[in-house]
Image (cartoon, rainbow, N blue to C red; front, side, top):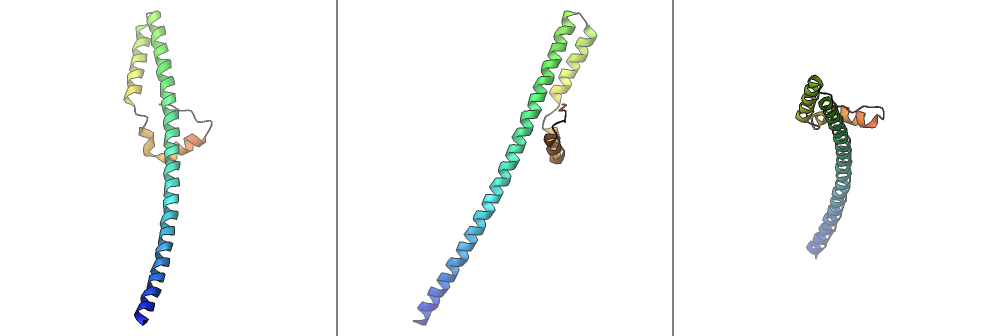
Length: 115
């Protein structure tokens, strides 16, 4: 009978320990998921802004090309074409290597995005 009581007591103790572990795991899961969501939101926001800026830059450069072609200005045409090639070579992901700089830029409403 002592063995049954001891086994039951041990069972109750293990059950409580496992409930505690499950609660800790659940709390860790919630914290981790919140961190992942925050990083995801940050990255999407950064990419939205950087790609919007790239699109504006390309649009501006193509307008310069149109003006240069209509005025037969080969020098301006060459400069604009070189700028387009340079912009196309650059990666909007380059600045992500230092996320603290990107976060500060996103938080600053006066920051000018140049790619």
